[in-house]
Structure formats: C-alpha cells, structure tokens
Image 1 (cartoon, rainbow, N blue to C red):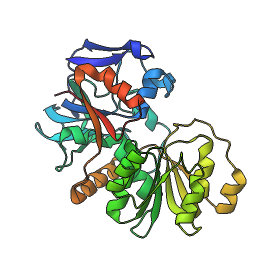
Image 2: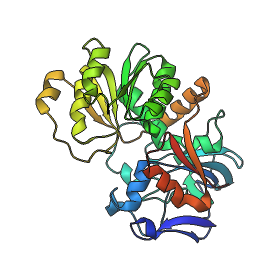
Image 3: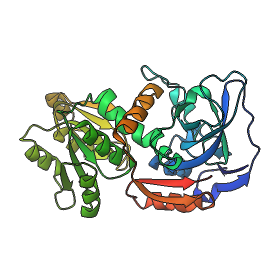
Length: 336
C-alpha cells in the first residue's frame, strides 16, 4: 500500500512510498482509509515542534481519519467488515480522568496514523462514524470536534442558558460555534476577517468581534455581556493573549486552553486569575466516551463540518500548505 511517512523532521522528509499492508492481530481492525483531515498539530509535528522526542522515524502521519473496516481479527466483537469507523486520537483514553501515559497512544504520532491506503487500529480505538456524515466529513471529528465538545461540556459544563467566546475560525472554533449554537447558548466569535465572521454568524454565532478593528476584544465581550463576561472561553491562541481570555470570562468562569498559535508560554497576570477565580483548563482533546456522545449529538442536530478544501492523496503536501495559510474550516485529504 502507499503511505505518507516522515523519515526526519521537515516537509522535505515527508515522503509517499510503498509499505506493507499491516495484518490485524486478534483484536484489531484493518481499515481501508477514505479520508484524513489536518490539524495544526499535524503541521507542527512535521516541523519538529510537537513532542519531537516521541516521534519515531518512518512514522505514517495523519492523526484524524475515517474509513471502512476491511478485515477483523479473530477476537473482534465491536465491529464487522463493512462498518464505517473513525479513529480516536488518544487511542487508550476510553473514559475517566487523564493519565500521563495517554500521549504515548496518540494516533498519527507516535502511533502510525491514517495518511495511507490502510491502517491498523485496535477495536477499542475507533468510534462508529455518524450516519449523517460522509467519511470525508467524519474524518474532521477526532481532534477538532472532540476538542470543542470536551471544552464546552466536560470542562465548561455549558447549558442552553450559557455563553461562550470562540476565538478564530479554524476547525476547533467552527465546531465550537456549531455545537454551542445547536445547544441554544450565546456564542461570541472573534476573527481578524469580516468575511470569516460572516461565516461564523451563518453557523449560529450571535455576536462577532473583529479583533483587528477592535484590538481590546475582551472589553467588547464585557460590553456585550453587561460587564459580566462569558461562561466559557475557547482559547486557541495561548501566549500572552491568555490574559484577555481571563478578562473575557465571567467570575468563576472557564478558559479552555486548546491551542498555542500565539506561543507555548505566557506572561500571565496571576492576580487577575486569583481575584476572578478563573479556571484555566488545558484541553487535550478527549476520551472515547465523550466522542461517542459527540457523534450522537451531531446526528441528532444534523451538524455538518465546515470544509475549507479537499485534496487528492497524492497532493498531501499541498494540503499542508493550505493548512499553513489559515483555512476557513477543515482541510481534508481524500484517499479512497
């Protein structure tokens, strides 16, 4: 089979080559991959800035994938040949609290990912793909959609009377807007592009803020909420902007820190966190139980992911280039 492998860090070392089709063990599924979606994590991994110490040479890249079960091991009970499945990123995190060893089970590094014609997955490390989504659409879920879901519900405990700030219009942010809006919550979206903010409104955002024309977006959030702030801020940027997220959250609110687009370190105003009793919650995607709840919610509300663009398997490097440009929604590579 053909697979995109990474022999060393840097895009010059991302290579399409022939490798052996893996054979399923007793509890494994051999999945014929239909599509892979890209996340900022995938780009950072190839560049060598995402947990480089964990990444083996010759890794098959691609954290998020969906496809069809082509063969099953002798002891498999959860799935059958022909079932549509989607990979689960933290593959050993089934339920319960976070454990330190879970990063060792990340799909797409250090475990081989889905940017290949076939991939091998333990039957416990996938979920049933939503009936309402195609494989191309389902491939967008494992990191972006589950991160949004986990931020809003597992950590943010958002309910229909609540409010949320969503930063930007990348994959996590788009899903957060759609999910919170479907719940009935108030959604305030920020972006530097009026065109992207128009898309956010079409997806259910009730208020929008262009942070280029309104640099103090946190003050605008407070104005929109009568000085109170919101229940949850989905912070995709990290860096020193974390201070603005704390300001935009209500007293006792939650800042769900999901990304590091503006930096992996922050000069945080600790006193503001203390006096506002803010919870700053790191969000490392989520467990399989939440993923299964997400799938049911998406089916119930007929939520479709926002697809920026789709590329052929052979053009995977162009898909990474598009990711670097700041897409509106998800970038997908279609394989079968």
